[in-house]
Image (cartoon, rainbow, N blue to C red; front, side, top):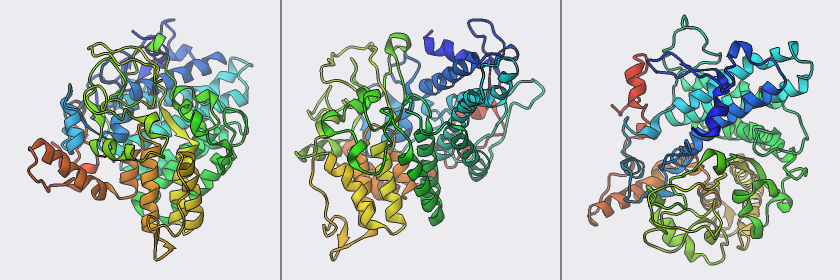
Length: 515
């Protein structure tokens, strides 16, 4: 068993929603029960280690699996970034062709609820620690609570984006007398009663103007989650007021300090130069731009076997053939060679180079190898482009173009002019064209960072982008016969609920049209 699971075991009682086992009793290595835990200041850091450990496992896997975690599958697996490679896994075909079934293991939400359960314990018990240990200062407790509230908000944010309505629990599950099986709560209620209040409270509690620990939910990271949430609400509900609120949160991101101790700001001053851009993925603590990344130590945790990893095996997914063929034609864009393997064929198109050094060898074999992978949750480049989207939506197209150009120029290309037909009509900036250009810039800049699918859903671009993509993929599988089915039923934007969750909890109702 990997060290990461030993750390996670401190939660004591883990709620597994929908399980016929009403709860799982996890015994920590030191045999400390939850009732006897949370008595020392050091227990705050230990509990937070368990919180982050649980999230790491959900995003990157258990250290042994050849398939890895869900970070890329949830954020990009169903988009135009990746497609089925033809190797190893039938589930990747489901992603590639929008043919998800309830038997797809990636549609299991248990790991997110495990993380929520740990957060619920932290939220309940952290305030009590000062009664037992005077070293548990209010600042220490508040910072711990801030991270727990923010993580709970983020996990529920993933859940409602992927499945919509979902079970809601905001207190530890500690008694057999409690009902373990919960029905689905409307997603809007989860947003209003948990996600938004949690992230607001997290920001109030976190210490401000501190040099960021980019492995934790720090001031900038919490504000970034909030901005992301409000952008989602604005886009999916067509609520213009939420764009304005999102801009307020972007300003809070830019006012926070990064890992170097410098305030992020709204210029290129704290963007990582393209020469060292790859450090954002190899060594984010050395960069100016990092906000929050997932930590992983392969010595203790094993293989972070992401589905597009530079591993000793053929990956279940590969970089989509259209991106692979077209992006590398842009010889000015210096991100290309730092992100994908531009060669074609086995052991090339199915490799994402972004999180690996160039020296890492690729040897065809079946066993995963332990290599550190440090996926980005939020960074300044991501925030600048999302901010550009908000500015465009609120009518400030000049500054939207300016923010997009900070990333475009950093990549090695000349600035896009306001009169360029790419973003204008008859020489005037066009909101629709500008939005498409921003989304295209986000696709290239953030390839492999778990953003693309959520971008398409948030901006109502799923059918516009995925109809021709899926038709092309189906046609290729049919030997070139033209296909025109497209993405299909809009209800399939949501994921199916995993079949065992339905079997174990008769209060859950499956998302239509899944069975």
